[in-house]
Length: 385
Image: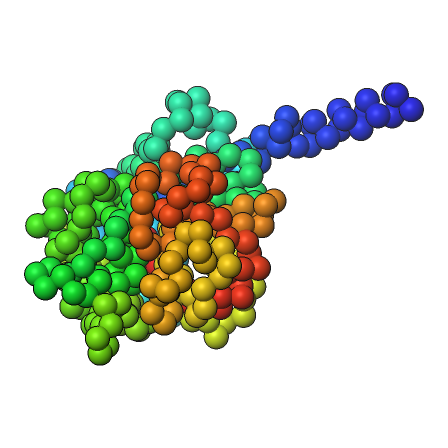
């Protein structure tokens, strides 16, 4: 029996590694091409000399995914690829390949197929890690004159396997009274939007906040929230001090700010706004929340009713006017919980430095079970790359 158990443990060790570390890896979030040819075998790759480029991602000979297409690419101009099927997932102990390709606008008419610009360049986690745990790795195909940098996020075993995710460094923002009259509150919608936009501003370098706020994560973004309230048509009704933002107007407000940020990218991938309404099945919404958090994109949830996790202890329910917007910035499948920022009456503020802050009894962070969020029937609104 001892021999059998010893062999069993040895087999498990080989298959999964200590503590599951065989699942460690990385996500290729974006790829920036800095060098590529415009001719091949003496002929122009594209008729006008400006190829439409994209990346194919392979596991051996099997194509797994593709990036977005960049049209009319000019030499000596860097192009950043993300979107479509990205990020690409890299696991340990496997060899993947990236291939730069010219897209055929004619859709393969007259056998005019998409043409490879580079060879299939191997991407191996272990080889990359010999250079250290970096954010970016330079890749080259000297034969075809192609150079690009992959920008990655390193994942631990549980994150890589999709069991949990956590987005750090989102700053809680107080809800204040709108100046100068100070008789109407800014609203949970604009505050939730400001927290999400502040994350993309401070952590990813997108100039999405109003420049007059000089936002650094610690100051109140008065001008951003004021501008958002205008674009999202946020208002109070009657003599109410609470302000409300309709779901579609919430999307309009985010789109306005994202469009401004995309006008000054400085080589970064474009941002976009996505929404999933509450009419979709809960399982679909739950999986979307988890997949976006895996990609480090926190979400705004519009709750139709206030769940028990937010009542009393964290949120003064008497101050909720209609639906309520919150932030979800993490999940844990083992605990069956979401990590949540309620966005009302923020006290004892601290950044989302890790899951442990949600266990503290303050109004900035709390835990909500999967079932509680399900029963609140949320719609999802978020910014992503």
